[in-house]
Image (cartoon, rainbow, N blue to C red; front, top):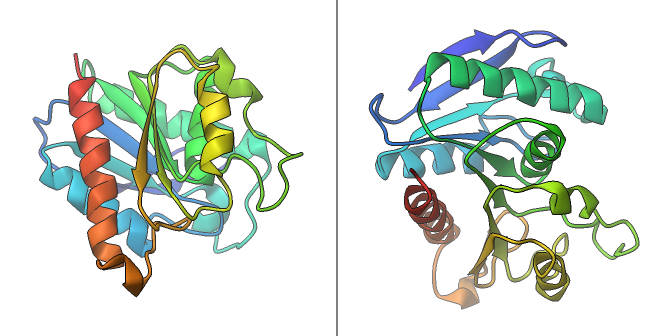
Length: 218
Protein backbone atom coordinates (compact mmCIF):
# COMPACT_ATOMS: atom_id res chain seq x y z
CA UNK A 1 0.00 0.00 0.00
CA UNK A 2 1.14 3.52 -0.80
CA UNK A 3 -0.30 6.62 0.87
CA UNK A 4 -0.21 10.29 -0.01
CA UNK A 5 -2.13 13.53 0.35
CA UNK A 6 -4.25 14.77 -2.53
CA UNK A 7 -5.09 18.45 -2.93
CA UNK A 8 -8.78 19.27 -3.31
CA UNK A 9 -10.63 22.61 -3.56
CA UNK A 10 -11.64 22.15 0.08
CA UNK A 11 -8.34 21.03 1.59
CA UNK A 12 -5.95 18.08 1.28
CA UNK A 13 -7.18 14.55 1.99
CA UNK A 14 -5.47 11.22 2.60
CA UNK A 15 -5.37 8.78 -0.28
CA UNK A 16 -4.18 5.15 -0.29
CA UNK A 17 -3.52 2.81 -3.20
CA UNK A 18 -3.38 -0.98 -3.01
CA UNK A 19 -2.64 -3.55 -5.68
CA UNK A 20 -0.16 -4.02 -8.51
CA UNK A 21 1.10 -1.03 -10.48
CA UNK A 22 0.45 -2.83 -13.77
CA UNK A 23 -3.16 -3.74 -12.96
CA UNK A 24 -5.57 -3.91 -15.92
CA UNK A 25 -7.96 -1.46 -14.24
CA UNK A 26 -8.22 1.02 -11.39
CA UNK A 27 -11.16 1.34 -9.00
CA UNK A 28 -11.59 4.23 -6.58
CA UNK A 29 -13.78 3.66 -3.54
CA UNK A 30 -15.12 6.36 -1.23
CA UNK A 31 -16.27 5.59 2.33
CA UNK A 32 -19.78 5.81 3.67
CA UNK A 33 -21.16 8.57 5.87
CA UNK A 34 -19.34 8.92 9.17
CA UNK A 35 -16.58 6.52 8.15
CA UNK A 36 -13.07 6.99 6.83
CA UNK A 37 -10.91 5.15 4.35
CA UNK A 38 -9.52 3.24 7.35
CA UNK A 39 -12.88 1.68 8.27
CA UNK A 40 -12.50 -2.09 8.45
CA UNK A 41 -14.86 -2.59 5.50
CA UNK A 42 -12.89 -0.18 3.33
CA UNK A 43 -9.59 -1.82 4.24
CA UNK A 44 -11.02 -5.29 3.59
CA UNK A 45 -12.40 -4.28 0.19
CA UNK A 46 -9.12 -2.72 -0.88
CA UNK A 47 -7.11 -5.75 0.15
CA UNK A 48 -9.55 -8.23 -1.39
CA UNK A 49 -9.85 -6.36 -4.70
CA UNK A 50 -6.09 -5.93 -4.90
CA UNK A 51 -5.87 -9.70 -4.47
CA UNK A 52 -7.82 -10.02 -7.71
CA UNK A 53 -5.11 -8.00 -9.48
CA UNK A 54 -6.79 -4.59 -9.45
CA UNK A 55 -5.36 -1.23 -8.43
CA UNK A 56 -7.61 0.08 -5.66
CA UNK A 57 -7.68 3.65 -4.41
CA UNK A 58 -9.52 4.87 -1.32
CA UNK A 59 -9.65 8.29 0.29
CA UNK A 60 -11.12 10.45 3.02
CA UNK A 61 -13.68 13.13 2.47
CA UNK A 62 -12.66 16.46 4.01
CA UNK A 63 -14.90 16.21 7.08
CA UNK A 64 -13.44 12.80 7.94
CA UNK A 65 -9.91 14.03 7.30
CA UNK A 66 -10.53 16.83 9.80
CA UNK A 67 -11.96 14.47 12.42
CA UNK A 68 -15.57 15.59 12.09
CA UNK A 69 -18.48 13.12 12.21
CA UNK A 70 -21.10 14.81 10.04
CA UNK A 71 -20.61 14.76 6.26
CA UNK A 72 -20.09 18.02 4.41
CA UNK A 73 -22.68 19.38 2.00
CA UNK A 74 -22.93 17.78 -1.43
CA UNK A 75 -20.80 20.38 -3.30
CA UNK A 76 -17.87 19.73 -0.95
CA UNK A 77 -18.24 15.95 -1.14
CA UNK A 78 -18.51 16.10 -4.92
CA UNK A 79 -15.59 18.50 -5.29
CA UNK A 80 -13.42 16.22 -3.20
CA UNK A 81 -14.29 13.13 -5.22
CA UNK A 82 -13.70 15.03 -8.46
CA UNK A 83 -10.22 16.03 -7.31
CA UNK A 84 -9.34 12.47 -6.35
CA UNK A 85 -10.65 11.10 -9.66
CA UNK A 86 -8.58 13.70 -11.55
CA UNK A 87 -5.52 12.76 -9.50
CA UNK A 88 -5.91 9.06 -10.27
CA UNK A 89 -6.54 9.67 -13.95
CA UNK A 90 -3.47 11.90 -14.15
CA UNK A 91 -1.19 9.52 -12.30
CA UNK A 92 -2.41 6.40 -14.10
CA UNK A 93 -3.27 7.62 -17.62
CA UNK A 94 -4.86 5.28 -20.12
CA UNK A 95 -6.02 2.81 -17.48
CA UNK A 96 -9.74 1.90 -17.32
CA UNK A 97 -11.16 3.77 -14.33
CA UNK A 98 -14.09 2.67 -12.19
CA UNK A 99 -15.60 4.88 -9.50
CA UNK A 100 -17.81 4.00 -6.57
CA UNK A 101 -17.83 3.36 -2.88
CA UNK A 102 -19.69 2.29 0.19
CA UNK A 103 -23.17 3.77 0.64
CA UNK A 104 -22.80 7.58 0.51
CA UNK A 105 -19.42 7.21 -1.20
CA UNK A 106 -21.04 5.38 -4.10
CA UNK A 107 -23.85 7.91 -4.26
CA UNK A 108 -21.41 10.80 -4.53
CA UNK A 109 -19.55 8.95 -7.29
CA UNK A 110 -22.82 8.58 -9.19
CA UNK A 111 -23.63 12.27 -8.76
CA UNK A 112 -20.35 13.48 -10.26
CA UNK A 113 -20.64 11.04 -13.16
CA UNK A 114 -24.24 12.10 -13.76
CA UNK A 115 -22.95 15.66 -14.00
CA UNK A 116 -19.89 15.32 -16.24
CA UNK A 117 -17.09 13.15 -14.81
CA UNK A 118 -16.04 10.32 -17.12
CA UNK A 119 -15.33 6.75 -16.04
CA UNK A 120 -15.68 3.22 -17.36
CA UNK A 121 -18.24 2.09 -14.82
CA UNK A 122 -19.69 2.61 -11.35
CA UNK A 123 -19.54 0.22 -8.40
CA UNK A 124 -22.09 0.69 -5.63
CA UNK A 125 -21.49 -1.25 -2.41
CA UNK A 126 -24.75 -0.84 -0.54
CA UNK A 127 -26.35 2.01 -2.50
CA UNK A 128 -28.44 4.23 -0.15
CA UNK A 129 -31.57 4.40 -2.28
CA UNK A 130 -33.53 6.07 0.52
CA UNK A 131 -33.27 6.48 4.32
CA UNK A 132 -34.71 3.49 6.21
CA UNK A 133 -38.49 3.62 6.15
CA UNK A 134 -38.55 6.77 3.99
CA UNK A 135 -39.35 5.74 0.40
CA UNK A 136 -40.59 9.30 -0.11
CA UNK A 137 -36.95 10.45 -0.06
CA UNK A 138 -35.60 8.52 -3.04
CA UNK A 139 -32.08 9.20 -4.33
CA UNK A 140 -32.49 7.91 -7.86
CA UNK A 141 -33.27 10.71 -10.33
CA UNK A 142 -29.66 11.39 -11.28
CA UNK A 143 -29.03 7.68 -11.94
CA UNK A 144 -31.13 7.86 -15.11
CA UNK A 145 -28.73 10.41 -16.61
CA UNK A 146 -25.73 8.07 -16.40
CA UNK A 147 -24.68 6.27 -19.58
CA UNK A 148 -22.04 4.05 -17.98
CA UNK A 149 -22.51 0.48 -16.74
CA UNK A 150 -23.37 0.17 -13.06
CA UNK A 151 -22.95 -2.60 -10.52
CA UNK A 152 -25.17 -2.73 -7.44
CA UNK A 153 -23.95 -5.08 -4.72
CA UNK A 154 -26.68 -5.18 -2.08
CA UNK A 155 -27.40 -7.06 1.14
CA UNK A 156 -30.83 -8.65 1.28
CA UNK A 157 -31.45 -7.08 4.74
CA UNK A 158 -30.35 -3.55 3.83
CA UNK A 159 -33.07 -1.09 4.97
CA UNK A 160 -31.49 1.66 2.85
CA UNK A 161 -32.12 -0.29 -0.36
CA UNK A 162 -35.14 -2.62 -0.47
CA UNK A 163 -34.52 -5.00 -3.35
CA UNK A 164 -38.01 -4.63 -4.87
CA UNK A 165 -37.58 -0.84 -4.94
CA UNK A 166 -34.14 -1.15 -6.47
CA UNK A 167 -35.48 -3.44 -9.18
CA UNK A 168 -38.03 -0.77 -10.11
CA UNK A 169 -35.17 1.71 -10.44
CA UNK A 170 -33.02 -0.67 -12.47
CA UNK A 171 -35.79 -1.12 -15.05
CA UNK A 172 -35.14 2.50 -16.03
CA UNK A 173 -31.36 2.07 -16.23
CA UNK A 174 -30.05 0.73 -19.55
CA UNK A 175 -26.97 -1.09 -18.25
CA UNK A 176 -26.95 -2.30 -14.65
CA UNK A 177 -26.12 -5.48 -12.79
CA UNK A 178 -27.37 -6.55 -9.36
CA UNK A 179 -25.55 -8.96 -7.07
CA UNK A 180 -27.29 -9.93 -3.83
CA UNK A 181 -25.42 -10.83 -0.66
CA UNK A 182 -27.72 -13.16 1.25
CA UNK A 183 -28.59 -11.98 4.78
CA UNK A 184 -26.29 -8.95 4.46
CA UNK A 185 -27.25 -5.70 6.14
CA UNK A 186 -26.17 -2.23 5.00
CA UNK A 187 -22.50 -3.03 5.72
CA UNK A 188 -22.92 -6.64 4.53
CA UNK A 189 -22.75 -8.00 8.06
CA UNK A 190 -24.49 -11.38 8.32
CA UNK A 191 -26.01 -13.28 11.23
CA UNK A 192 -24.67 -16.56 12.56
CA UNK A 193 -27.77 -18.26 11.20
CA UNK A 194 -26.52 -17.49 7.69
CA UNK A 195 -23.88 -20.19 8.15
CA UNK A 196 -20.93 -17.94 7.35
CA UNK A 197 -18.95 -15.08 8.83
CA UNK A 198 -19.23 -11.41 7.95
CA UNK A 199 -15.69 -11.55 6.62
CA UNK A 200 -16.79 -14.35 4.25
CA UNK A 201 -19.69 -12.18 3.10
CA UNK A 202 -17.26 -9.32 2.47
CA UNK A 203 -15.28 -11.73 0.34
CA UNK A 204 -18.42 -12.32 -1.71
CA UNK A 205 -18.79 -8.57 -2.18
CA UNK A 206 -15.21 -8.21 -3.38
CA UNK A 207 -15.43 -11.23 -5.68
CA UNK A 208 -18.59 -9.88 -7.32
CA UNK A 209 -17.07 -6.43 -7.78
CA UNK A 210 -13.76 -7.73 -9.14
CA UNK A 211 -15.43 -10.08 -11.59
CA UNK A 212 -17.69 -7.34 -12.90
CA UNK A 213 -14.87 -4.80 -13.23
CA UNK A 214 -12.61 -7.23 -15.08
CA UNK A 215 -15.49 -8.20 -17.39
CA UNK A 216 -16.02 -4.50 -18.22
CA UNK A 217 -12.35 -3.67 -18.71
CA UNK A 218 -11.57 -2.76 -22.28
